[in-house]
Length: 214
Image 1 (cartoon, rainbow, N blue to C red):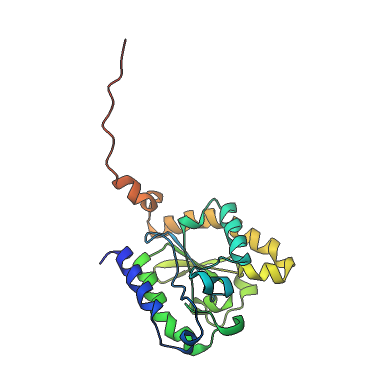
Image 2: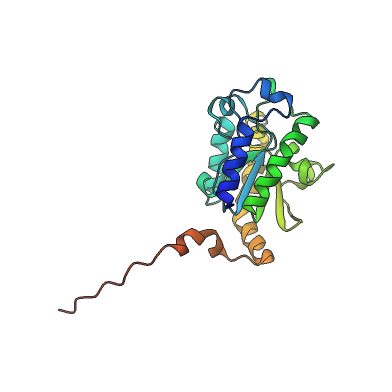
């Protein structure tokens, strides 16, 4: 089964999942979106109101700021995979509970395995806690570290800048380092930059056109 097929299968399972209480209040599940060969995965916390309505991650004000952050790093949303540690909206945007995180983790692990990114960016403390349990985001934000066979960078959640404007400068500075960190990750993992463009390289070349000399 290809990575695309695996992600589609997971999305189908998530849409009918009843493994925790969140399914009782969801309108639409939010499995995550992005290319199956993404070099970068961004993992947030949980869907909010707009995400619950549309079934897509980061489509509210925090999502708009995330798009700006990616653009600053020379990326577009279409370049990266975006999801959350829980796939359904917690009521009133409360924090996800341990059993809810555990219920969704199996889906997230399968998504990570299928995509096999070079870098995972965690957005917020709950996604950070999956890879760095017990750490404080104020102490490790913007730092890249090896976890298993890939790298993880912990970032503040974009929504934090909406509630605490003083964090905006910090978040902008952390994302500004992303292109350099991606190059380091590629080099350490032995992945060529061209690997991300495999689809382009696999495309048939155009036949050379004969030049007219006269």
